[in-house]
Picture 1 (spheres, rainbow, N blue to C red):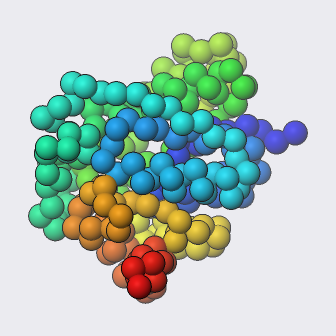
Picture 2: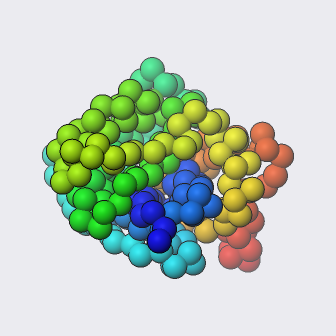
Length: 229
């Protein structure tokens, strides 16, 4: 019987590569998808499609964060996503969702406890990222202690939170994804909430730069170009 793993899954470049990594490692994967009224809800469609392609059981968790009004541009439709073309890791951008990974991981830990999954995979990255505090290695070190201490399996101390991409550059993630057969054309990274990538938000900038470093055209852009004709 395959070991079970929960995958925190957004349908983006990183989480999809993480899913394919876990599948390659032989895990039976359960995808956890979140709908928190984010502007870029198109990522949910991408996540569902990719989960279904891989015949993974998935659940969509819907919740609201009403206190993020006037704070987070990914949720508050009146706030513009700051797009200055530069990534500043020392300054948290207004796309930061307060404690998002902690909220996501809480659901994942709960589901893992019920189905007996010993592993939770998350595609967090501490190299090419926008300065989010809950993407740092020390954060996952502490949250794993919480998971191992406060769950049914705490005495066995076996629940692990795995971050296979944490020390990879975005271009290295793409190279890994190519080896794993990731369908990048189905992934979604843009924060703007439009039908096509804006190519201006932090996520689009990082993605574009990474594909250029690898030396290939982003398959998603090719599909978008074709669909617009």
